[in-house]
Image (cartoon, rainbow, N blue to C red; front, side):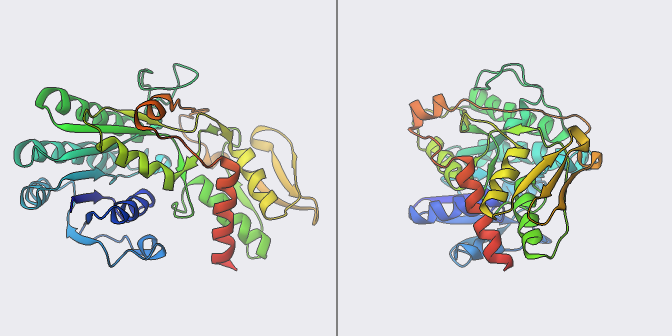
Amino acid sequence: MKKALITGITGQDGTYLANLLLEKNYEVFGGMRRNSQDELHRLRVLKIHEKVTFINLDICDQFQVFEAIRNHQFDEIYNLAAQSFVGSSWDLSIPTTNVNSIGVLYLLESIKRFSPHTKFYQASTSEMFGKILEPIQNETTPFYPRSPYGVSKLYSHWMTINYRESFGLRACSGILFNHESPLRGPEFVTKKITTQLCEIKFGSREKLILGNLNAKRDWGYAKEYVKAMWLMLQQDHLEDYVIATGKTTSVKEFISFCCAELEIDLAWEGEGEFEKGFDQKTNKLIIEVSKDYYRPAEVDILIGSPKKAKKQLGWEAKTDVKSLASIMVSFDRERLS
C-alpha cells in the first residue's frame, strides 16, 4: 500500500484527490494546521473524512515539515496547500508568499534531506502566465504574473524545477488552468455565481454583483484535473504539464449557462462597468457590475494547450463548461432548497 501526503486536503482539489487515491488503495494522510479553521465539510460530502489519517502540519513551520517527512517516508506528496484566492493576494501578499513560496521550499528541502525516494507534485497555476505573451499557453510559454499570488506560485514552480535538475528529486509541477466543481470555495467567481443565482431564484437574494464580466478563462472540472496530478507522478521521468481544456469562456457566458439551467430568462443591457442583467420574466435587475471587484492588474484571458498531457499522460478534459455549470447549479439548488 502506497503512502501519500496531501497538503491542503480540506480544499476542493485535496478532497477530490484524496477520494481518487483511496479508490486506488493508497494510505492517505492529510496535513492540517493545529489551529486550522478549515472544516471537513468537503470530505464529508464525499464520505471520506474517516478514511484519511490527519497529521499536524503547517508547511510554514520548517521543523514540522522536516519531522513529518522524515518520520513518515511518504511515497508521494501532493502539495495543494496555498493561499489560493487571487483577489486577496494584494492585501495578503506576505502570508501568500510565506505559504505559496517558502512553504514549498521547506517541502523540497526536507525531501532532499530525509526522503529522496518520495515523488513530489507541486500545484502551479495558469495565473503565472498573467499578461499573456502567446495566444495559447503551453509548457514553454514565457511567464508574466500579474498578482502576488501568481508571483508566489512562480517562485515555487521554478524552485521545483531547480530541485529536480540540481538534486535529482522526483518532482514536477502541474500548471493547472481554472478548474471548478460543486466543492469550490464561495469566494471564487464560479461558485459565487451558482450560489447567488440559486438564492435569487429562491427569493432569498435580490441581485448578484460582480467585477469584469468579459474576463475569459479556460474552465474545467476539478474532479478530472486531480487525475492528471496522479498521472504525472506515475511516470518514469517526471515533467511539468499544462492541464487545461483548450477552450475559453467569459464570465458573462458562464452566467448565461447557469441562468438557462435555472430557467431564468436573462437579458443584458449596457456595456463594461455599466452592464446589467435583467430577469425578463419579472423585469427585475439581478446582475450588476462593481469596480470594487476589479483586480488592480487584470488578467483578461487565459487559455491552455493540453496537447502534451494528452500525448504523454493520455489525459484530456471530458466535461465542457456548459455541463460543468449544470453540475454546479444542480448541487447548489439542492443544497439551498
